[in-house]
Length: 323
Image (cartoon, rainbow, N blue to C red; front, side, top):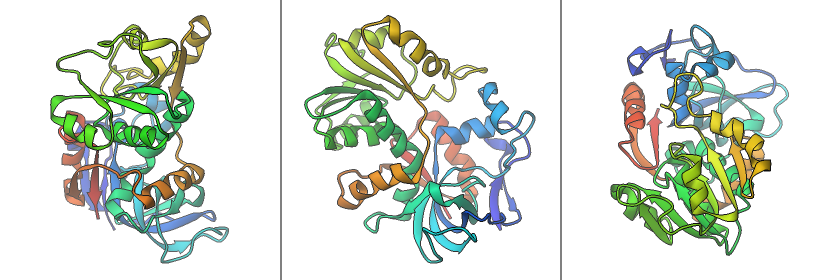
């Protein structure tokens, strides 16, 4: 089968379109004919091996899994002996462990859900990592009706989901983004927009009950100045290009240690995609309450270009590779 694979860490130049063996199917796994795959900062991390601390999990000298991609949407073609939730022909979405930038991939059944009929395979592939991260961030932040919520990186992959979910919960939402993404963020339901090229997040003083920081590049002191004295600050991601050792993730790790010593609450979020979270998102996708924002789609052979564009932040929302 055709797949985008790599033998060592590096820039997008290490990625190659080549023939690889189809992955074997475990007892609790399904085999998918991949229709689309999402592009997220995790793909960049696996490709470059940066931050270096991440190599402890997926290979010191080279990636343990050669094929890139995590988000996946496709059609089940075979199921393992102990799979009970799916059967061949089912259209599903979620995450896979063998790399989704490929014609075929395997995924554990507890990392998948049935694809809502109202959305395309491309929209489904854009959802798992970013949608679940946004969902977990709002949960940890205690977002609910009447709360004033600030979302940084509101035009990005996680941010576009977070804006829509917060509005679905009944919150008042202010999105922080660049000038070029302001109209998009407003169209997603944001009550207000802060253009970070003109103003900082503390422009209006300490008025936000919850801050969801998906951008990962602002000092904690600045975020605290924008939050109410008893507000909650949720730190999402670390900025995939920040720092060689920890990549900015030290903020998330430090959050539970710092939180007891301040009146504001700090929460660090690293979401894990499971069937339960996807099941919570699916009816919202089906009803149109949330709509995945796809900045651009790429054919499989141009996946390296998709990762370059992701790193440069050229497009809003999510980028998607189609197979």
